[in-house]
Image (cartoon, rainbow, N blue to C red; front, side, top):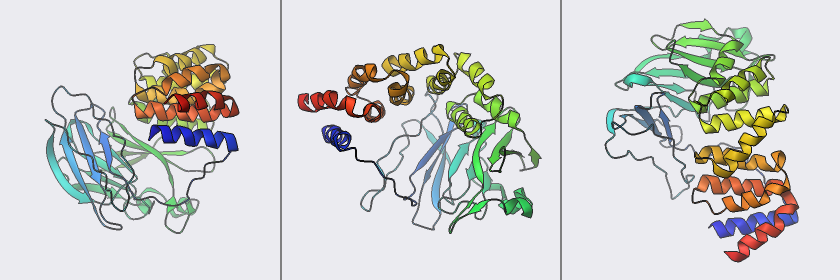
Length: 339
């Protein structure tokens, strides 16, 4: 399989063939979301189209690290991927709900948040809180969150209303932070986890999230702030990068941004993670950056990563080779020939 993929990339580089993406909804895949403390997680398995999906709320076995969302083979007519529980993990609640666009698991077994509707964004309840027993506690529609004049500003397609940017849980205040689309700077709402009570947030909430784990939500806030070129971003990123307690995969993203601003410390960190990162996700983030950060001198480093056992790292090395363009052809040809 890997050899075939290598050969296809080599051919693509030789003929400069662009890769196209389909503009449609793919079948939904199972989802897994861990709580910030790592002691709980929720798994969603999609049902048939337009039907409810199954979920389980799970207590993680004592002493095990937080469970990460696994990489799954995409669903086909003959294959429905599943996320199985691991030995020692305990199911505390089961139920059914609408398949979400995103899901957030709460600390201390408090349940989870279902966010928006897959393939029907903005329809029905866009936020729904489930309790520790898997029962709906409260929900919000777009009409609950926004006045009519704001609703009119959201882009609409045949199936969806595109209103949101991202969400995260603020465990310090027991609130859900919702960032929504606006013509200028994005808007921020805060909803109390207890009862859904709403209050206004601010851009400062986005900068604060950049500096505080977990990494997935840090990166989401960083991507959002960068997209909108928010004032104060560079300061927030420098502070987050300097904090060695932050995960490698978050710090490497911050390092790449700082390198773009002319910070050589960022460049050195990207190179170090690409070559020797301990977290495969961080290394996979860093490898495709090498064509821009180092140039063709890094082809040998990327070629070495093609021997990685981790599929995520291997795939990132392939992506990096594409970034080198024609300069990577001799090396790729040698790898294909050797294998």
